[in-house]
Image 1: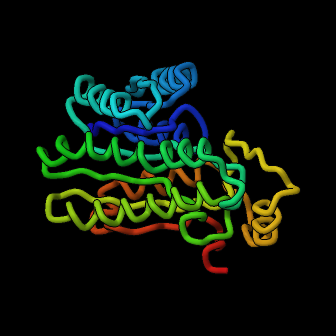
Image 2: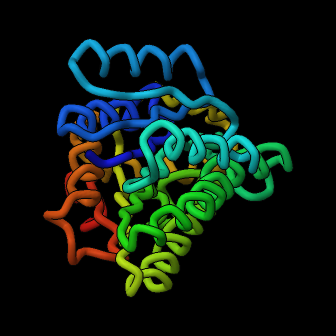
Length: 247
């Protein structure tokens, strides 16, 4: 059995991934800032005959991120797979309209938290000389026209982090990859002022997004990249976007 950490697993893509990993027989740490949501997913997994434990906290905080990894180690004996999925949106704001608070929060959750979790998990993977890390990036990590300044910067940074991890640790038995979702049905909402520059500009391009995906479709790509079937796939950004990245 593998020990799998999925962040942002209380809902959306993270929940779908946690359920799919558990259905495949993996042990899952369901990590989410919302404790009730995390416990609900653990209950779903338990009822289906799987094995899971909840871990809660703001993962942009180093102590909280390290505690998630410690939970996996103490409960399941290590960390075999880390899914850095948790994320928050911005308000589609252009740089001039982006507040310090929004910038820091979006970068904290979307980029700093995956760094902290990866750093905490790596020693346990290195000890076993194997591991898989999957990052949930975004179409906004591939282009400048899919979101606001903070979210776009965070997802471009996340892809850079993934690629660096892939190269640094590929000779140590560790792989790192990312999915780049297009539009997906989740509970993440965008509070955008349509009269401001950012939403007006981004809105011109969103018609290229195509069909909205289900969370299960994104989760299936995550589970694949973490599997032995992807054993020679490393440093890849896999768009799961119905061809949006090809436009």
